[in-house]
Length: 335
Image 1 (cartoon, rainbow, N blue to C red):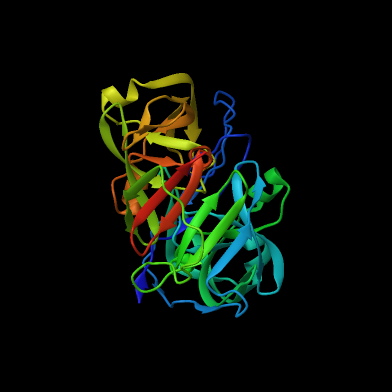
Image 2: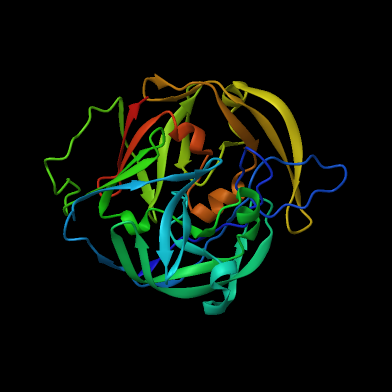
């Protein structure tokens, strides 16, 4: 039995950037925000492991095509007979379904609430997925949460069944190649080595240990020699860093403008738009990337680990990422 960390998306996409937070309501004196927003929630629920069925023709290595809607990364899937897309969200450890398509099967969970960056809360539902198919992979009997993702569908004009993290892929090395829009899955043995030794392996430009909490990957990086912890998050359309970093780190950010975020409640937070100029991992310095700066204290609370930021889609486009949850390692082949 596992007590899983749950993340619930309540997204409103208004443009090209994304920020992980709560639903937004813009007043007349509040800037129109160019991000999508997600609730991040922490729920203690006993989850039964899913049953996995492999295609006997090629059980040890698969290549899955990725679909893109803006900076959202998606996998085509069939959930209980309904065909659509699941957002790949490595910042989540669970499956969350869109209530537009699955509301009839969902049941309310008393006391199940979610809080975002602004601290707002809502109540969510849960259901059991009988059958989930992604390409050649099939899973059965998966507990999932249910939330309204209709604003994501309307903004991206694509059928979104929900989102999922790496939990269902923990028995595989996951290779993300956003330049070619593919995700390779290499089945691992109990020691975390590839079962199929004939598959091509690469020499990594970067190879580092990572921390894995509830199948969410956290890595160490630096900004101007400040050692920081980041969540590797394919569900974040933009990079995000905390506003309380040391001055020597924040001083490297070229701030372009600021906005005010209002959540579903009455609380408001300030968000800065800027460019991140000095991110490095080991001895590798990354190119200038867009970043959002805001308070991430609530996010750290929900993750159960102090994080200083999230590295999203733009960061993941810098190379091919090899994620091995069993060995808790990350390898990067730079583009």
